[in-house]
Length: 477
Image (cartoon, rainbow, N blue to C red; front, top):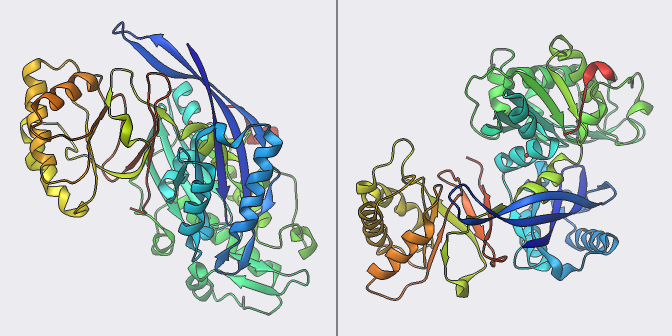
């Protein structure tokens, strides 16, 4: 059996907004355990929208109606019917995520697109999707090496560290190409409050309404690039760089390959020179200059650097092509409550799991989600015995006595159907059950679960709070 589903990705960034539509082909196969399972066989981007400036009503408000028109036009041009879109992601990134109506725009757009489309936010997820869309995840798996992807946009830099295909770490900083903007005469019209401390520290005379010096702009860009070197663990972390982190600081790592994506990456490794303000006239910001300074500062690491084919569109391609996960086929679910969105995930064991302590460990985290439907996540035994399934079921039932809503269990190993059946038999009250497997999560993630596609369930794992190639070498430019 083959199924084709359509996915949309919408990235509303600090500088630009991009939209893509993709065709995902699902296929049923017989797995190693001789059980039929559904996989995503192929992903194809069938439409890319023009890259347009993100529309704003004023400095603090996104223009939702214009965004909606852009999305409507993209769907029309793709030739895909809106009601045929069954998954995807709406991501508001960088400084745009801090606009007063960012959450409202995300929710409205998700609602307009349909009940299966997922609205997501948070720099950690953006870093992951950008790394996947740029091909850094695939490259690290292919090379069996550690790859760091720096996605540098208008307001933020989102960083993901991949090791042999797995994402080990994500973090973000307030470094981007739109932190300072000016008009055609070179007068400053915007300074991000996030870097005001740097201007003071460096004694740079950059003020609103005043003419700006190209030398001072370059000095600022070189400082921001030094911060990127430090964040990439290529230099010691200073207190100035620490202040630019949106998320927690990364653990020390050594990357074998360095990849750049995002709008600023379009200027890395180019022969463009900035010697006058006219050279910055396209965007009237520091983006081109920042990209050139990155080329200079990272030149000593040029043997490690690659530039993905997809740079400015990396995040939106990640959102459209990599946000969807297909659950295993040996699952249990109550269709009447699907689709459901934004369910917080409790994963009580950070190290070795003890099935006899599921209740005691899980209860510690329930206080964070009072009167809220939650999903419980386990790796679980690889081939659990009936006795083990019974113990797990008893512990989960005891835990859910203190939780409103359906019982939702997310397993990494493949035994969801058996567990769901035993939980159902042991329950004394009527309660809806969803038990999914072959899904890896982290504590603090959220889950969206869609309607079944054949005998599988589409799932999106996401991070809503702050807390997957074509390549060319830099030398070839």
